[in-house]
Length: 95
Length: 486
Image 1: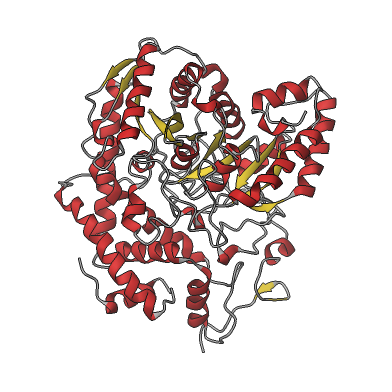
Image 2: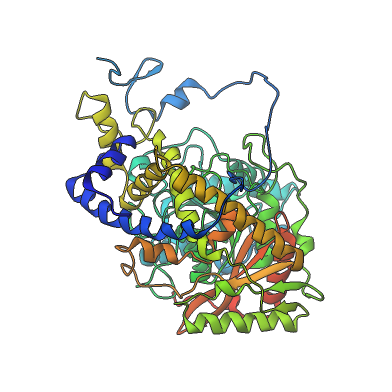
């Protein structure tokens, strides 16, 4: 599995991860190599097998819908890079 | 008493209980040791000296009132991916360099409820992604047995802290071997409990279906004490198991009569160092002397697929978990633009290190349209086979024994530019996370002064059998008494 630079750029866009030109080339080579190592899974017959998402068979863990105090607003906003009164401040999503 | 820092939990507890030493004295002695060796090993990213001394004073009051518990007043260090209220939790990443959590992880709440003394936070591979602690955004941690070598990872800081007596014990986390592999590399006890045994609430997520918190200690008896303190169901972690937790102290029986042990031959891999093979075999023979029935012909043929399964599943989960670092709510935030998408991309570009970016890319690829079935879904199906194979083995055996890693600790810088070689150092530990099983690494020998670990793998939620085997072996050997030359 050889990745092209275009494919690497496309994956980075999906992840919203900025990469330098040097990183794009480095990851193109390294990811191609790693993906080649994954080819071994093609040998395994997985017909009719269910996937395992996690290893203990807990299903539909529910809890009563009760109101509880949340964390204080000041505590949660204390780490905000930018705030405006009681809100996180972001850049415009729609322009 | 100049050597208080060398005590085990059990020994320290006895002295505290008999009031022969106070928690403040023990804490000061351990901090003095920490400051003395830290320049050489770089195990810690934050030292919270003032808070620790306050906690020690409080612990002394509790002890005076006769309410001492096994961990009361005893100094510990915590891997820096567990949230500590009011104390920075960085994941050794630039993106969380200044993050101060507004709450404690459940394991921290539990330690505080027992009046433990938290000295600080330990270095790790960034976001627990790595096998050498070289991926820390701050500095690499060094192996105290040879300062030019890696301590293993990702819980390298916690493990080195325990090996050098910077703390009496520590907590680590293990997603593919991150407690056990460094424990083997530094000759301490490191235990990854069954997935779901210890709450993950407040553990910064890497791969949610694989992550588990566990103890790093000087002895197996100490391991049981820490596990007693941190195990149990937590409604805030919906994957935590609602099973009763036994008293792990009762598992410490120093004989192995009639215990059936399987030695899966696939774990004695090609490229394994001869000394590691020899010392693992010697350790297994010792278990036989202690009464165990050993089957050298156990087989887990799916082992050869585990590496690929792991390096699809873990990065896939990581790429989803790390999408939250958008520079809006907390953490590093690129400010030099008015464009939202550019801000997000640059935040990640400058906030994350190379290995984290590599895994985000790998995971995003495996989950993307057109590749999901071929990679992610395929890996989840092979995961089913790997788990079934373990379940079948446990019909015949009470536990499985393997080396912890195929090599002794490698040189700093040796594998950092070759991700596949680095990934291979976890080849013996990561199948256990895929299956969600409990496993321990205990000291099992040395080659040219470098430590090696033995891994004991148990049935789901049967931590007790593992502790029994580990305890019996430790009682019969002296490896755990050796201290690094530092």
